[in-house]
Length: 157
Image 1 (cartoon, rainbow, N blue to C red):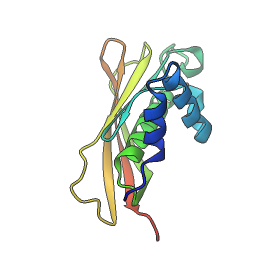
Image 2: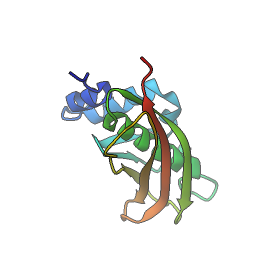
Image 3: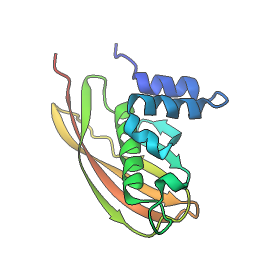
């Protein structure tokens, strides 16, 4: 029997509780502290889809008052990574291999990143898995498009 995914299990336990999504988001940032600077909030986490939002605030703004590029890349990588973690089989592991981004327009509001992927029929012993991420503003306008390539491989015995 496959071992349940610990991250997905924690999300399922916490997300329905008052302040549960906030707590889950803080716990993820405790485990991966470099994401704490953007203060992400998880809104959705399931196999094949994740949604993370951030508030526009001074610490994520650049000199022209828009959300800076690295903050958007951080949220894209966070959404892609957590979604990959809860999607892949328990027999596999993942690591980000690369990311391409396209800055579509100025990010002048709070943002949400939506990561999706088409689940492969065969995970094999090692594959490049492209995760698509759209970062949208509060008007549902795309401000950034990213493809985060994950290297997914079988765990060593």
